[in-house]
Length: 471
Image (cartoon, rainbow, N blue to C red; front, side, top):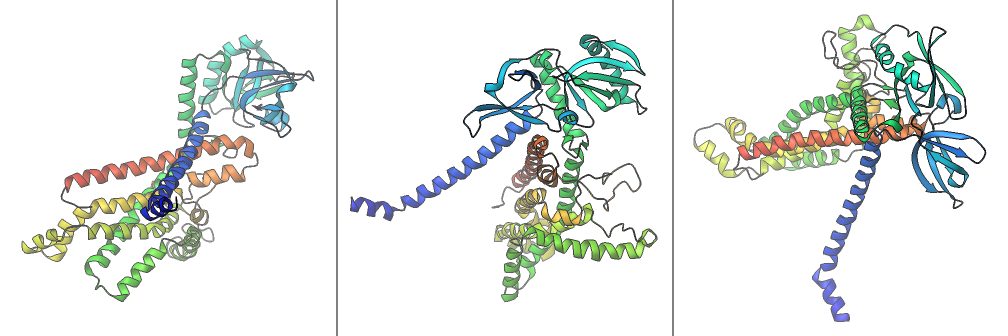
């Protein structure tokens, strides 16, 4: 036995099994996290059926099932999204299953999506036009609504129609059609119709602006701001990183100073991101931006133009944060270029610069793009530096619009990472905001994956083009 244990430890199999177990556990945790985000993110768009519960105390509850669990007292209970925030002051409610007498799914139950106060769940009662009843009864109102809602959506004038609805316990609520975005009968939808509604919900979230303190509506400004910031950051960090790496690897005399610079660059990658944010605020925003305002925008002072946070300063700060990644990856790419390439170029009469420009850099491009991919992935997920240099909860205007000069780098912007933080931790109604947190997280992951896939495809094409590269 002792001999077997000695041989086992001596063979190194324990180390191999430990590494395998650690890798498996890590993959399992990452996979579980992704599954959790995907299920909750994609599930947010599905038009779930409305249920009507009859309780032992005689009250009724209408809403969408949002989960179930066993309470600390050992009683099974379900979680219902009851909506009607303006009537009850909450969006969700836990109900013990032993208090439920009956659970039904009537087809006349409606979900009214409103511009304010979230969804309303109940039944249609009457449709009124300036104190005149136009339609009375659930079916009559339901038939009259589609053309009026389309007109209300396309018209900016105050709508003269109002909708009277009633909740499960008979409480009436009157709302202008101008405040209603759409009315659905989820229980009356076929599977194909629900799929169509699902696709529409996805499109709405991806292409519209947020509302209700970012807890509802879309996230298009945040998607646009994130992608634009990453693009600006990439345009800045790539030339600076490549030039720095080219000088360190090809031109600088190797010695103590270069080794010290390399150590400093590697250590720079480990500096907390909030430190870069403080630097960006002091140097870019107050220093550079304040100087630009004093020289070219003095007529607008004391209101700052560039002397305040904006997408340009946020992008430059993240470029500074990610430049060590590009430098290290580019140096590795340059080191992997075979010496014969350089010698052959010089032997044919090319100068060193021509050799660098026409032979070494093209061959090292896959390595450079690897650094850029890593830089984009980190920049897209950073939040702390942006909070000091330009990101906001709700941007009044986009960095690009139809107003001259079309590109407004001084404007503040929205960001998916900050949107997650704001909705998940700063929202006054965290419970109602939770689905939006999952959706935004899912979109952020997809944006990072798409940006990285773009870089990977480009890198692979370059690798095939310069097939002799050892990178």
